[in-house]
Image 1 (cartoon, rainbow, N blue to C red):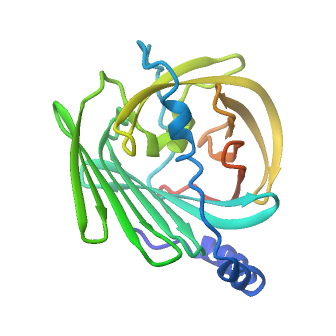
Image 2 (image 1 turned 90 degrees about the vertical axis):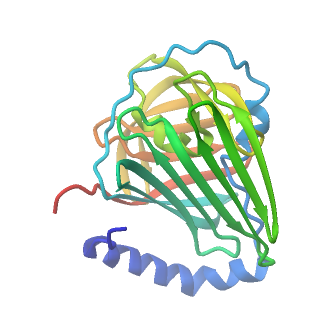
Image 3 (image 1 turned 135 degrees about the vertical axis):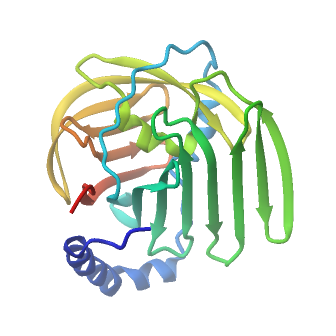
Length: 267
């Protein structure tokens, strides 16, 4: 994994120091129960029709080494920072996301085909505020999906049929929305496999408007993408690299906003 760029380290260091001085102790005392915003999507997703999907033409707007830092809050109270990276691991694209400065850290790793973005493997590790660890590993084979769930010393292995392609892992949703051919009035749908429930569902997207939005990282011209019937919206930058600028999840009560962005690429 590449080291964090010095320019980003300076900015991030100042923010982290301020956060640790003013907020870390409060978060530890309150032992906030982290609600994974995308996990709140699962129950609602399964109510949607897993019908035929006309695949959208995806685009790849990012460069290798990209780093994005979002701050996630609820009711105006900071919960944690979510740092994500886009890297290369051998012949695969690696998307990682890590919850930082929280009593309940979470790490996601999703290994993807670099051209189609079809998932090959995903790993999620989670530690509760009480120190209990759990993990979920998903392997996408040629005919089936193998899932290994670990809670402490216990391990449970299950399988599920491979969905009709194209399909994507639920955990890559925030990366996937950036690759959609967004424009005024665009509508589309994709098929997601939800490892936590071993189910496949279809999610519908619609560009509802274009607007300028101000977040801690600055002002961005964005397409506002609604995840239909889910109470979720994504603000995606209009111009490449089309960063995820803001994400609202009404069901989880969370708002995520861009704090820092490093585009990656050649130095």
